[in-house]
Structures are given as structure tokens and as C-alpha cells.
Image 1 (cartoon, helix red, strand yellow):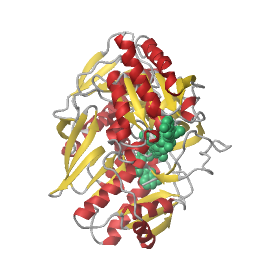
Image 2 (cartoon, rainbow over the protein chains, first blue to last red):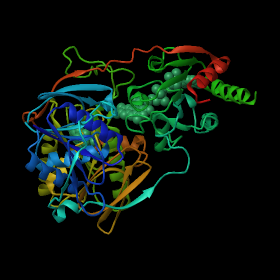
Image 3 (tube, rainbow over the protein chains, first blue to last red):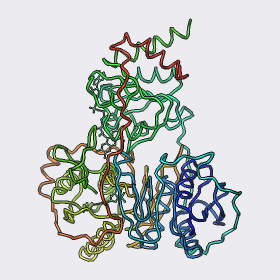
Length: 305
Length: 249
Ligand SMILES: Cc1cc2nc3c(=O)[nH]c(=O)nc-3n(C[C@H](O)[C@H](O)[C@H](O)COP(=O)(O)OP(=O)(O)OC[C@H]3O[C@@H](n4cnc5c(N)ncnc54)[C@H](O)[C@@H]3O)c2cc1C
Ligand SMILES: Nc1ncnc2c1ncn2[C@@H]1O[C@H](COP(=O)(O)O)[C@@H](O)[C@H]1O
């Protein structure tokens, strides 16, 4: 039995996909479009000219499917992984299961609602197309390890103009030079309880003191208090800081979907019954407009002594 | 556009584990698609033309179609079914409906077809791409920016720390993400107008699912109960101690 896994260069989610693919058994074949390294048995390095074109990667996968006759094709649960896999599914008119956390023969468990709900489903097809749910699989030592270094094989796909018609023609950076929300070690996040756009000044001050970034809930972006780039959650950014401070955020599942990767969650809320306290490690009950500046003042005081 | 429940703080299932218990919940337009509707309306406001909105869903999905009409769409098509459709069948039904509309309308193909990047509830990440293949259209996914000019679409796709740019000829299909724009709040007159706009309903039945839902499961919570550090600003020293312990102070 063969299993084929798509690996992108320097991509943690690809390594997680390898762990999942390895767990399916059989000989593990990797497909790398650019130079990528992965603990697989055979690594097919595809020669595709030019910038990223999802159709070209999908065509390469379908040609490798013809050659290897795999029992499963696994993609990372990234936007790109899911995109390429959906192209493959559309080309072959096969079912596809996105963000799978576990596979048992014909059955899979997959994420709905950004991971807030699980679905057990049956895939009615011998060839299983699955993406691996982000952070459902571990990587590194032991996990997904191959016995020997991968055998490298060059693969030259036959591509038509249609395969490469849609491709990246340019890239722009949106980095502002500051600490990005996705990478920040501390995120100070505000919800409806902050009350206004100006109300975020105290959160910004605390974030700056901690070398962190400011996040917010969807209520805040919908109200126009903060740009959508600051939104944490299912339809915003997923963050994984060492400390996430949720100020005036109730703890809706769609918000939690974006911050459950945080190592520690501190909630500041004036409602002791707020759902957020059931997700938090630490809580402070009270008015955030008094508590947040007090924390900033205390930090300054401690640093001075 | 898909109708989805606003689940709030906790996912609760029906007794048979087949669906979310939605008796006490409100419903909304899946957020990515709300931005999709807003974008389509802005394009037609700036140029000319017509925005048609389509949903496959239960009778109640008509409420969200009316919301889309209040956002400025011109007319709605409702593929009505109480069944849950798998993504492959959903794409098939939507592609069929688009083809039928293009034949009947006589106006030729839609210049632009907009989907969400993924539906909020089932998150299958595929319906738009499948429809693009069925209709033979170029497809760009995950848009956070879109500009149309000279019969082409300049698409900005969100990637880590930036945007990848695609430039495709129209007609095209795009999938969009929340943040593409800030959808308007419909005014009261817009809501009243929406009630008079055409909404066409067609009953449909699903083929056998090839990704067949067996049951839903609520993931195990972390079973946490926050350690309360205190009440009010007096808790600040305890908070800073925690920060020091975590090495972030
Ligand atoms: C499909 C879908 C996707 C969604 N995606 C996202 C997403 O990506 N991100 C997201 O955040 N939401 C998302 N939502 C919305 C989500 O369901 C909630 O509506 C939202 O997260 C609530 O925001 P909030 O906590 O700021 O507001 P509320 O729920 O109104 O909570 C405000 C909280 O602030 C507290 N408070 C008020 N005043 C103070 C004060 N002075 N001091 C301290 N506490 C105070 C209150 O006790 C309350 O707990 C989504 C919803 C749907 C349906
Ligand atoms: N039942 C439906 N009715 C209308 N559009 C849908 C439906 N299901 C999915 N879509 C569209 O397809 C996109 C991707 O869905 P999915 O593949 O389920 O993640 C959604 O964001 C919607 O734009």
C-alpha cells in the first residue's frame, strides 16, 4: 500500500500532515514542489516552472496518483493544502475530507466550526483525499519518523496551459514592521466590553509594555473599532502566544477557536458567569477599564525596583 | 451563501447526535459569504448590472436570502432542501443552478461568481473550487482584496505576512474571506425593499452522500475552571506575578 503526502517547504503543518500520513501505514511517498525535506520513504521532487499555480500542483498529484495508485492522498490543513486537495477532488470527481483528526478505514473524524465541533464521517471511495487538521498531530522525534533518509526522485509532470493559467503574478508584504498577531508571545485582546475604539488605548499600552500585539473579537471589527487584521477567531487569525489576555470578551466558541492554541489564557471580565472563565487558566473579575491600567502600572513599578 | 446558526458559548447536540441543538439559537449568513455579498453589491453599485444570491438550505434559509437582498442583492434563488448535503453534491446542485440561470437569463454567463473560502459550519474548503471546475472557470481562493478592470480580476490572496496577487480574466470564480470589506448594516428602507425583491424557490433532493456524516461529537473541553486572581484593580500584583512566572513580564 502507498500513501502520498503533499509537503510544502518550511511548513510546520506539512510535517504534521506527514505524521498523519505515516499513521495510515504502507510506504509513504512525499510530493515536494519546491525544495522540501520530510521524513517520508520516497520524496518526489516535482519540477514545475514559475510561481505557485494550484492547478499545476493538482495536475502533478493526479499524475502521481496514476503512477503510485495510493490508498490515500494527504495534504496539510493549510489554506494552500486544502486548496490543492480540492482541485484534485474536483479533477477526479472524488469525495474529500478537510481537516481530519483521525482516520479508521473508511471512517474519519474531521473538524467542523474551526475545530469547535467534530464530525465522524464515512468516505465512500477507495482513494481517500484528506487534509490533516492543524495541530492535531505532533511532529519531531518519533512522530512520523522514517527509518532511513528519503529516497529522492525527480518527477516531471506534464502540464497543460490550463493547469498554469491561474498563478501568482506578484507578492506584496503587509508586514508593518511591528510584532504580528500570529507570532506574538503575548496578545492583549479586547471585546465588546472595551466599549469603543479609543478604549483600546489601555490595551495597546499593556501590549507594548509586554512586547506583544493587540487582538480583538468580531464584535469589535464589525463595529469598526479595529481592523479585521486584529480579529482573533474562526474567521480571523489563529494565535498561539505564551499568554493571551482576553479583556471584555465573553468566550464564544468562534472566538475560542482562534485562541485555544495559547499556552496560558487570562480573562478579565466583569461577569463572573462569563463562558470565558471556563476556557481560562486565570481570571480577574471586574471592570477592565480599571484593571488593565492597574496591571500596566504594577508592571512599571516592578520593573523599576 | 449558507445559513448557519450563531452557536454562542457552547456547542449542544440533539439527542441523536446528528445536528446542533438550534432551538434557542439565532441564525446568520456565514461570515465569509456576507463579505462576498457586500463585495458583489459594491461592484454593481460602481458599475452596472445585477447581483443574484443563491442558497441551498432549508425553508428558513429564505430569511438569510432576504438579509442578502437587504444588503443590496437584486434577486435570490433558493434551492430548498431539509437534508444535509455533502460538499460534492452541494457543488453539483449549485453548478446546475448557475447553468440553468445562465441559459434562462439570456444575459450570458455571470461575470463573477463569489463563494466563501469555507463554510462556517461544515468547513469543507471545496465547494467553490468544485463549481469552478464544473463551469470551466478560473478560480482564485481566500481573497482579502479584489479589483475588477478591463475584463480582468486582480485578486489578493492572504498568505503569511502578506498577499499573493493573481490576475485572471473574467468570467471567473473567487472565494473570499471575512475582512475583504466591512459589510454594511442594512437600513430599514433597505429591509423593506428586500421584502419586495424576487426570491425564487426550487425544491431539490440530494444524491447519496460520498462524504457521509455519521454523527457529530462535541470535543472534550479542557475541563478548565479559571483560578480567580482577584477582583478589580487590586488583583494587579497577582497578575504580574503570573506574568513573571510565565517569563513574559
Ligand atoms: C460563523 C461565525 C464566525 C465567527 N467568527 C468569530 C471570530 O473569528 N472571532 C470572534 O471573536 N467572534 C466570532 N464570531 C462571533 C462570536 O460568536 C461572538 O459574537 C463574539 O465573539 C462576541 O464578542 P465579544 O466577546 O467581544 O462580545 P460579547 O459576547 O458581547 O461579550 C462582551 C463581554 O464583555 C464583558 N464586559 C462588558 N463590559 C465590561 C467591562 N467594563 N469590563 C470587563 N468586562 C466587560 C461582558 O461581561 C461580556 O462577557 C463568529 C460568529 C459566527 C456565527
Ligand atoms: N448550502 C450552501 N448554499 C450556498 N452556498 C454554499 C452552501 N454550502 C457551501 N456553499 C458555498 O461554498 C463555500 C465553501 O463551502 P465548503 O466547501 O462547505 O467549506 C461556502 O463559503 C459557500 O459560499
